[in-house]
Length: 292
Image (cartoon, rainbow, N blue to C red):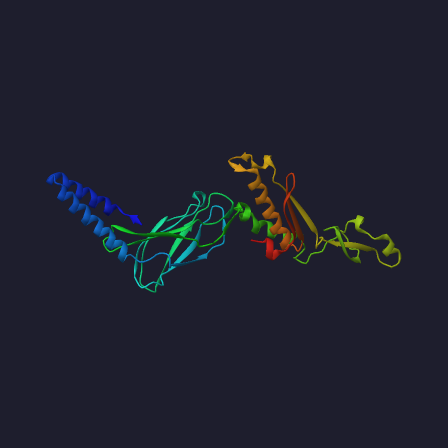
């Protein structure tokens, strides 16, 4: 059972009446009327135990962004539900609004949307959902809590995303995607060709030239299918702040940018987060897994 502000207001009015009449009969009558009204509200309020709650919406939110979680309340009972629904989340998730008035017909359902603005990284799960069903007089009602499981993972903000187009353009140029293989460019041998005026003499392949009439030079191309290992320090010193930002967040941001570039270049990226022991390990991240 839950009493509302109207019940408190009715009690105050009743107390004023009793003080004005100053009789025991007035006290009994006022108390009886208030208790009867509360009993009627409780009897006519829709039951809350039979409600079915489901969730939907975002499961991943970047720090600094917002996400929406939809809570659907189904009322299979025979009475219409008029009341308030409170969806509880941790304060650091920044859930708004906290309480939502609802009116659900018998056999119907209603949805409420909670907007999350996280202030911390990590995995977050909601608390219990409290539903208060009020009677027609709104003096009292039934109240119960339900579990509606859900999980939201708050990811790093990836502030360096704005640099990604520029870095990708440089990567395409370095990788020779303009079809311009030059002597000495890159570090992986590509082919031999005849020497032309202006070529670097250090690129001449003297053994091949000895077997031919012409002078041959080596051409190179950037390496591909490289294996990159990123080691992320998650020790105590990583919790220190520089310009108000934790060192760990800055390291994660740099790792995201490097992983995005490396995966676009066709490289294999492994990551290890370690302090005194290995906290997590990601092996063989591909473009589909690592590029946001």
